[in-house]
Amino acid sequence: MSKGLLSVVTGNTPAVRGAVVDALLRVSPQATVLAVSVEDRGDEGYPVVQRSFSGTGPHGREPGPLGVTGDPVVILRQDLVALRRAAGPGRPHVVLALPATLDVLPFLVELWRARVASGPLTDFYDPAPVAVGIDPAAFMTDLGCVHRPVRLWDGRGLGEALTPAEAAARQVEAADVVAVRDGSAGGDRSASGVAALVGHLNREARVVVAPGGDVRAASIAEALPSGAADAWRARLEPVLPPPPPPPRTADHGVESVLWRARRPLHPARLADALDTVLDGVVRGRGHLWLGSSPDAVVTWRSAGAHLELRETGRWLEPRDGAAWAAASPLRRTLASWFWHDPYGERRSELNVTGTGLDAWRIRCALDAALLTDAELALGPDGWRELPDPLLGSAEPG
Image (cartoon, rainbow, N blue to C red; front, side, top):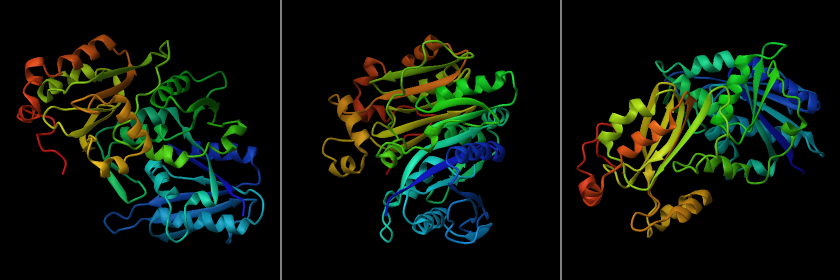
């Protein structure tokens, strides 16, 4: 049985998601669309997963809305495998239209993870580019919203509480192609500005501005290079590679600043520097080496006016074979590349994106928060005694 092709589409509004699906159907008119909604039931366990099948391809069952309570990953895997088996010979194309209530990247990792009973989804499908439709007005509204929590299904369950700003940023960062809806015939300035911002948030994605969010490109219906699932998993590592260099000129005033350091940060001085570092920042991502928690990788995620610092795993140690084996190939490669005795891979890397950023002030504020030579000489035992208004001094277990 030859493999099918699986396209994943989502969007920050149903209308732009539908526009991207319609564009795929124009490129691949024989495709089957599996549209999904996931409705949280609060504290009652698994959500209600609604699916509907449409298109000219074989559905493997009667088309129409189908609702069931259960694990969305398990339900959708069963649907996708059934669709492939029902299609027979040839290379069927399935478009999986996911709702904004899913955390796309970890969800895809779990969807493609091998299962004992049925094997990996790669036995049945090659993945096509993940396409995300963006309504500019809704996107900017979400990026400014940090005062209410949202929870997304991440493939293992209902994830941690996020702000709408964080959820919006994660959606575009999961994409291979982003279609920004242009609402005017002569070119919507807000759409092009949002496209510039999205291009900084996800520099590996192809960003297009199109009427209604319609992407007219055959490449969105072609298979990704092999290893796509491994690449998705690697992007969830707490220690990420630095992003590609920013554009030579700022687009619509959008720019990014990358800062790196190879000595620990003083947590109290970092707290004092936050107002300067976050001035004008729309999105920030990175990992830190804090003196008060010298063995912990501290991840930095900011979206809009909200900043989250969290201890996420440990730095790799030379004799910890189990940790090295559990790390992705990318993480092991980066650790070897950056290794420097006596502190190994420990380092800080932070990338912030926004408008009107003062790169010199941001870097100076962060440099001033690094341990001085005298503080560095205290060693890890002394660093743990540093006052920490950000996280406290507890390290991950």
